Image 1 (tube, rainbow, N blue to C red):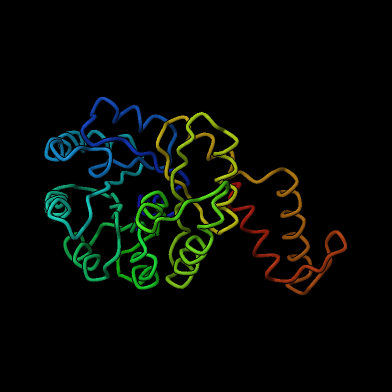
Image 2: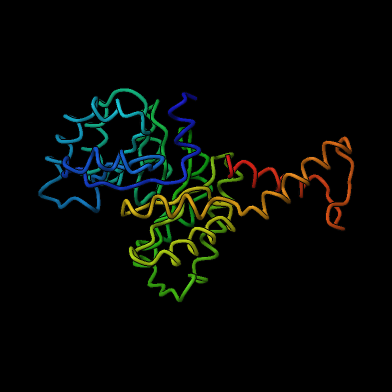
Length: 279
């Protein structure tokens, strides 16, 4: 895995920018986002798809020079637009990743990998069919991470969510299990549409973390820093994690007590995850 691909696997924030808005490309790369997604799908009208491809291709070399991992979101792989996107994407050089929306078909995802064998794939789970096939999709060669498109999922299924979206807990849990079984990097949670509500963003990030997710899709530059802050463990959590790891190392891996509670290897793994998030 290249260093850029490793950074895609570890990215916390994926900021969308419309592919037909080249005036926003560099601005997006300068936000501090861990990765920038150049969108050919929802953010681009059907009449502007060809222009968006041309704008991205024209700027591609200059975009790579910024050193920020690049991602392209194509149209649905089974659609004519998606097939055009995949054929066009063969010209893109260097390290980058492909966000594949409406992922439902293993065969379609395998065809994308065959066309772009060196490009990490991030399937977006956005439908009931995608939910039903998520474990198989996670096992397709070339898949790096899974991502949740909960707004499209709600539209597809007719679900109406209350605050904190408990109705989607089974979906997030299944994506987490598919991620673990597929040996993938932590999954990426869906967008927060409340652009002015920092508390809502923090709450959404903390919910994603509870489900084992490690990244979030962002639709506005101001969300980037908010996500990064929300993913940072508290000083209390870090202090606990450091003491747990130190106690484990001192005991040689035997069970010990920290704060009057038994610490064994599952607890140590949990502590190490806190420390990894802090890094």
